[in-house]
Length: 428
Ligand code: NIG
Ligand code: FE
Image (cartoon, rainbow, N blue to C red):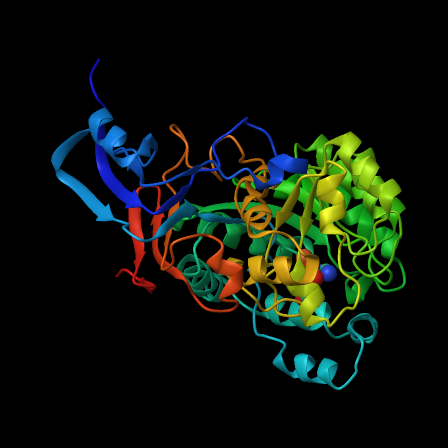
């Protein structure tokens, strides 16, 4: 049999966390299965897919080297899958640094929104921006994510809140998907807030979302999901049901911002509509957790948002894992509740706020996150056939990520077999 040729070979990893295992999201004891290989190696073929994984001596036997093969020696370092960020709002104009300071002085997030600020401030600025301006700002954010080790990212709309402005944001996501090295998938979050023009007739806006925005959004390549902010001052469970059900008829898989600040029944709705994920979940109870498990919904937890909003209450992550719900982690990168683009920082928060083990957090930030955006078969672990998306840490084990909290330990980032970041810097 001909040996596959390697275009890139990473050898002698002190700890290669492959996450190899059964092709399904991980919960319970499996949530910390890392499939570690000591003195590990990974070979990536010319098409950017992984061709061999194992101990260095074995992999060197299995593949053929050509004069073009690049070899990276990871001696003394850990190699992990590239991070998958399954929940961001990365396309927006401006920032909310002034609101950040207001909140530090005691202003409440939902009260700011009710007064026409918060999300609605970003809506104003995003509506006024051109597609090119939005692209330039988001492109820069995705560079920062890449330097922090994120090789796959989900991005939501939701700062347009009109057919034209939502489609503009979604076109930016499609352009990022076409032009970035990272894998990018998109979500329509037209129901993020009630736009000012519909302030007194929110049901008319829900109607517009269902009959006009969703069908047009579903025509855009790389837009795969439909999401709703189900919260006091945003959308009710009934409105969310209507929107997610309509989205399904256009082939958009449901996701939901649920139980972030109140327990409204969002988790139960996510189970009812068989959402691919339910996100935030600070206020769920055991009954909700069991519904999520039975319906196969993945919990996407966003500790950055809770931390920035200085919430006392955190999502019961360990309880979910224990009761069989696969937990994923995301940044929720957005200008309001989470100006955080770093997945390593999120892993640290998940360990420190929820008490997850570093291993549980790593599975949550890679394989389970990939399943939470429908990419579990091709992304999120280091296995033959999957994309060659890897991170080499400036540390001998993944356990140092939460331990050196807030410090960039990402040395090298490889996307589909191409080295994009070296020594913590973007390659030009
Ligand atoms: O996931 N909670 C709703 N949406 C975002 C925040 C958006 C914003 O404040 O701009 C979130 O936290
Ligand atoms: Fe969000």
